[in-house]
Amino acid sequence: MPTSTSAVSSTSPTSFAAPSLPDRRRGDLILFMAIAFGVSWASWFTAIGLGGSATQAPTALPYLFGAFGPLIGALVIRVRRGRRGEPAPEHVVRFRRATLFRVPPLLALASATVLSAALLAHAAGGPALSWADAKEVMRDAGGPAAFLISMVLSGPLSEEPGWRGTAYPRMRASMGRFRVGLVLGVIWPVWHLPLFSIDGTVQNELGLKREVGDVRKGGTR
Figure 1 (cartoon, rainbow, N blue to C red):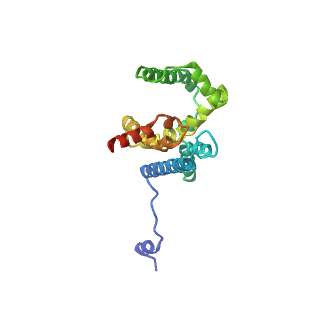
Figure 2: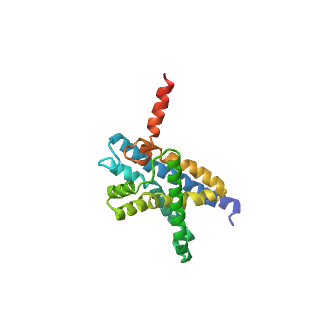
Figure 3: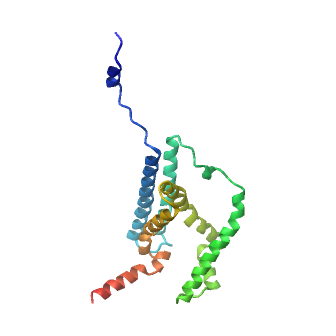
């Protein structure tokens, strides 16, 4: 006696549809943010608990490790993509010779931006540019070579694979460039907030924590 189609369907195991591409992107983005903030903030709050300066042991270790939260998040997402059988994005694996010609003007533009910001800060009452101060910073870092290496590791390598290489394209799939820039422009400084409470960091030297304390004291008078 032939088996009816309804009987077969009723006894067969339930099949689940694979998540759609937008759902996978959303899930990857949420996971990346959780890892980036979780690793960084856990490390930086550990540094805050240890006290001391970010340039001295034992505070320096969790302080430095926290900077790699976005990179760790990006690596986890890449492994996750590999397990799903998805290839690496084309812009990650393809090297274009024309890109090399963009490097000098981009470096010049970045340098001009930093220089303009320093000049504007001086015009607003901040310290003047000083070659002696620049040499002191490089000397504290261990020399010009160590300074350049630290600049590569502290920002481009530890952060950009996460923010630019992982978060941006997933947000860009559902939002315009301007909106993505605004959203990431809010998320990025929030990610840095614990650094304002760690002595020896650039953020701490800005004096935000002290200014907030002064405002609170003024309000209680």
